[in-house]
Amino acid sequence: MSTTNAVTFWDGVYAARPAATDPRPNVRLTETVTGLPPGDVLDLGCGEGGDALWLARRGWHVTAVDVSAVAIERLTGLAVSRGLDDRVAAERHDLRESFPDGAFDLICAHYLHTPLDLDRASVLRAAAHALRPGGRLLVVDHASTAPWSWNQDPDVRYPTPRQVAAELGLDPATWTVERADAPRRIATGPEGRTAEVTDHVLVIRRTA
Image (tube, rainbow, N blue to C red):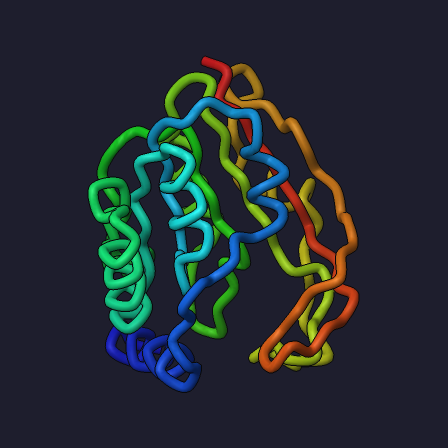
């Protein structure tokens, strides 16, 4: 699918939803970040902006990126309305073509799934290289399909965290896997629907 179609697809996904007025952060983010000193963070596929706003409120300086101009515009507006625009820089990137500049203490990739052509391993490898020493890459993937997911393909395959880490091919002398598991949680979807879902959680730390 072309870049134009990628933008059109994700703009359509977000435009079809009412704009979130108070988007919530992902639980895997809050449990990973709580206790860490704030620094510079990159949010890959920021979507509604719940993670970016939560981080900014806690003193992090956030670069939030998404392919959807609708998502970026909404997040920018929310950051301004909350007085967080000095801590949230929302940028539109098609990660197949560009990666944000900078070095980061934390990089988050929550549910970076797409029906479009995306070399996720290359994106996550670039993210690992953009970490400062001591920085962490948090990758949270679906391990099950929620009833409200846009992807209801019964044949969809969910790589394990260890498989994702192996695909990146990172030098263990420089990066180490701190967490690789599959916790369950009760998720709340559109219109308040709830369901038990499983996440695949991978945390990689740059040690040198």
